[in-house]
Image (cartoon, rainbow, N blue to C red; front, side, top):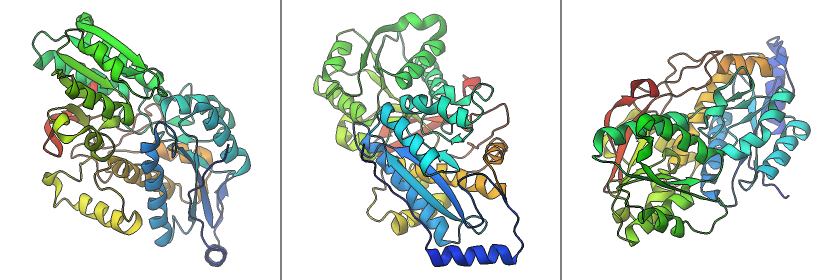
Amino acid sequence: MRTSRRGFVASASASAALLAAGVAHGRKGKYDEGASDTEIKIGNICAYSGPASAYGALGRGYDAYWKMVNDRGGINGRKIRFISLDDGYSPPKTVEAARQLVEQDKVLLLFAPLGTACNTAIQKYMNAKRVPQLFVATGASKWGKPKAFPWTMGWTPDYHTEAVIYASHILSTVKDARIAVLMQNDDYGKDYYEGFREGLHTEVGRIVKHVAYEVTDPTVDSQVIQLSGSDANVFFNIASPKAAAQAIRKVADIGWKPVHYLNNVSTSVAAVIKPAGYANSQGILSAFYRKDPTDQRFANDDDVKVWRAWMETYVPGGNLADFNFVTAYSMTYTLHKVLESCGDDLTRANVMKQAASLRNFEVPMLLPGIQINTSPTDFYPIQAIQMVRFKGESWEVFGGVLSNEST
């Protein structure tokens, strides 16, 4: 496999200057592999190619954030060396990439590797190696089990909780709900589906049809046609961006008019809604935890102004409607603060300790009222969302902040 590298490395002269400064100030750091007086090496695995290549914007965003950090002097005087490898959204390639990052590149930690199946393929390996698999870019509920996997932590709201909230919303707003479900046939799809069934509880029989698709399927047209023939008046679209956009367009093409719920991971206006067609997407429901920079409600928001300036400087030409850049900024900001909190103790154990010690942590671009909280027994950083509806050319937030406990 030929892997692509996307990273920023401090110049030799800059590293030498930082090292001299560290010696001059008597720095006595504690380090594991991947950290030193002058540098912190961070690994990442993303899908720059393959069926989930729309998520490549995440990797570009992480890289751009670390460039900004390095331009401002690094973290506690240390520059960030960010090494991102392409796995094409293929678990076997994820395993190869993880081994390369840990055993050859000797990174301090693996940050935000993408995908449920891909992270599942490396979870046992990362925990056996005692290397942080930190803030994984997937909302599967399995990333919040510190007793079994103390070196793995999620970041986004978990799929199970999100699906429970959709189920509750359907039961309270749709009369005589008859539900059809499209789901990706992997752990990601199954996690959403099981949460959804749990949320329906005694009303689970309202699911009249569910159909799975493979991530390698060229289209989901046939699956949507099957679902439309089930007399369902609600459609829960559990699909990654490419398939989600296809499903939205097909629903419109065949004249099916269900109440349409779309999972959060596929709410990007640039990657999903625009390709599906704005007219075809009106009224679709989902849930957010991030601010939408295309929403006029946030036109003068301080977070959005700073984010836009960052995009202009570090992601020139980047699509402001692509939520992946919003997520990348907020996730990397979180790791930035964790590493900053580590001070001169840049051991892997301390990285996990600091990551599990976030209290009412305010992160740029999260919706008002949504904060990050973790503890040694709570590896679910974000546990709240708000319902949204697509209107015009952007998402409209409505209702209050919801969590699994509030349903």
